[in-house]
Image (cartoon, rainbow, N blue to C red):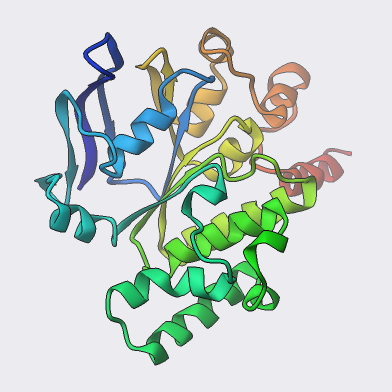
Length: 267
């Protein structure tokens, strides 16, 4: 079981930023959190990984409420990891392989095991050529992959991704979609936040829509994205594939590849 129960968070005794949020991630491989800027997505993510302590409510993991003692949080974050929107926020060493290996070295993992895991992670992310490179010479997209690698080294059961495609060119975005899809296939469960509605539609099977710190809709990906009125009220757009389905009557499909196959069959 992994869920958020009646969560309320405020800053410096001001009005709540998050209002009685309840979300259940337990039965889904990929859950999306939708919302415009200021809706509370980043605050929710910070609460889920224990960076913020709620004024009310609980984070419940493996049937137990999250404890905020240092040792308990340390254990929890070995199973629930986060990759922030800005990769610089979690890259600390000047050489890529030193940064990626840091967490396991800190846990006292044998160097041979660290090397084995590093080879697996770098192969998955297709960044083998970056091992010896100084971080300062990496592109933004490469830094994002290094930040993801540092979390994957822990073999977390859950991975929170905050705006994973932000700042990436079309090629980098497609690579990130492929990486996320492969992680899901390998058994990692994903909680995803993004302004990229096409990404959210393709990846997520269940969605929560936030507006001013309140959940205004939840449901399957199709159910949420077909509700144009709710999305517009939250300052969001429908994915292009959903627009084509509703406005032109094309079959509802998940990605561009499926659309092209369907389009050829329709012809």
